[in-house]
Image 1 (cartoon, rainbow, N blue to C red):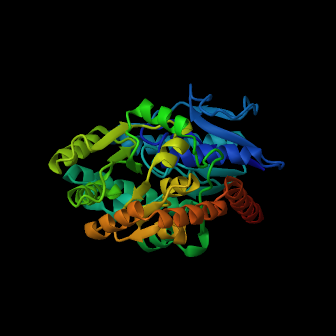
Image 2 (cartoon, rainbow, N blue to C red):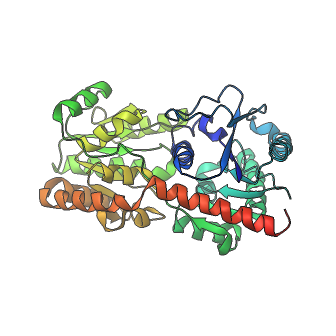
Length: 402
C-alpha cells in the first residue's frame, strides 16, 4: 500500500512544537519503524524536506514538495480550493492508495481532497473553538471566519472515510457537535516517546534549571497559554498556597503562546501580585523535558479541555505527581494515577496541590502509580493502530471499486 501523509503541520507556526507537531513527528517516526510492505510519501512545503531527524532512515524518495504557502484569512476560500485541487492531483499522480489528512487546525483547514482513486483518513485533535466560541472568536469578523471554518471542517469530517481522534472523550464531542456517525470515528491514544524517564541526578537537574533560570523548589505547569489552559485559576490557587504559608517555592509556567496570550499571562501575574514568584522560562527543549519534570515537586495541569493531555502523561513518565482536571480526556488518560479536581474550583485545586506538597507518602504512591500507568501508552501501539485504520480504509475503498 502506498500511503501519503500531510506533514505540513510540522512546520506550521504555533503547531510544530505543540501537540499537533509532536503527534505528527512521533507518528511518522513510529510508522517508519514498523515492518511491512507499505511505502510512505510525506507532503511538505518546499524547503522543509529535512524537518525530520529520522535516525539514519533514508527518506530521499519519501518527500513531495507542495508550492502552496498557508494564506492570510482574507483568502481562505481561494487557498482551500487550490489546495484541494493540488492535493488531489498530486495524490492521483503519485499512485496513492491512502491519504492521511492531518491539518484539521489552521492554516490547512482540514483539506481531505477525496477521490475515487484513494481512501482518506482525517485526524481531529479537538473541538476547542466550538466548545469555547466566545473566547476564541471575539469579534464580528472572527465569528464570520469561525462560521466559514466550521463549514469547511464539517465538510471534511463528512468526506473522510475514517476519522482518528485521540480519546474517547473527543469521539463523544465530535459525534455530538458535528453529527458524525460513531462507527467511522476511531479513538487512538497517543504514545510516549522514548527518553521520558525519572532523573534523580541532582547535578543534572541543577544544570538544566540553571539554563532556564529556575530555582530548585518549584511547582510546574507546561503547555500552551490560551484560555482553556486555565492559568488564571492556577495562579490564584498558587497565591492561596503562599498566603496560607503552605508553600514557599516558585510556580514555573513553561511553554509558549502567541504574543497576546503571553501578554495576558504577564497581566495575570501582576494582577495577582505574583511578580518574582511565577516564572516564565519559555520554550523547553525536548532533551530538557525529563529533567524539568523530574525536578518538580508536583505537576499541575488544570485544563478546561484537552483532546488528550500529553503533558500530564509525560510528567507521570518522569515520576512526578500530577494534579489535573476532571474534565474532557484527562480522566481517561491519567486514570487513578493522578489527583483529579474540578478546574473551576480554585479552593479544591489549591487543596489538592497542598496535599501533594505536604504528604511525602502520597507523592511516592502517585509516583509509583504513574510509572505503571504510562506503560499503557506506547508509540509502537499508536502506530500499529493507525496503520490498521489505513489498511481497513484502503481495503474498503478497493472493495467499493476505488
